[in-house]
Length: 236
Image (tube, rainbow, N blue to C red):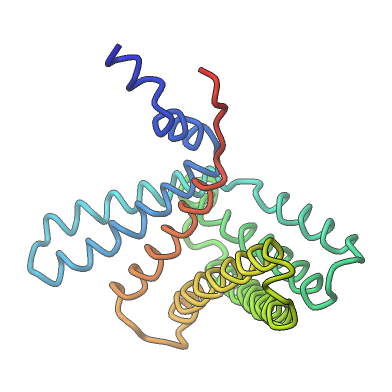
């Protein structure tokens, strides 16, 4: 009975379903990647080179597996960009920003695949030396579009909340408040990623630890969102 209770526990079943998806594994690996990157920096600062070396090794392995899982993911973003472009009923700013964001992310992931090819030995390390920098520029423009999208959503939901009578539309108020919170959280998320890409491009010069911490925060957001979206059936 105890074993059955553990095996069929909703949390365990949800975890299994979460990790059974490519997105679930990729988001978890991203969290591990940035967390050990942060720990590698901290241990190096505290004079623990062996431990720092171990964390860097784990980071390298997590990065390689993540790049494998993201292969051909640009197709997802191209598909999402096409869907957003065809949706003429959406707010023009939101629609345009979603299209630009997904096209930029498709470019970013395509160029990022070059690093994976190099790790596999398909390409020599010296080939396309600027690929990583161009990939970061695509990420930069994708995040700019994302920030515009976030701010526009916050503006729209805030305006609707102000004009809505809470007593006459309690459910609508809750819905709009949830949308506003989601957009605000995404704004923080994209801002942290933007901080990272600005460091990658050399516009900011914060420490490795600060960049890794920002990546850890956004990774937690990603895992949290995917976890909340993982549904399990009530039947056993």
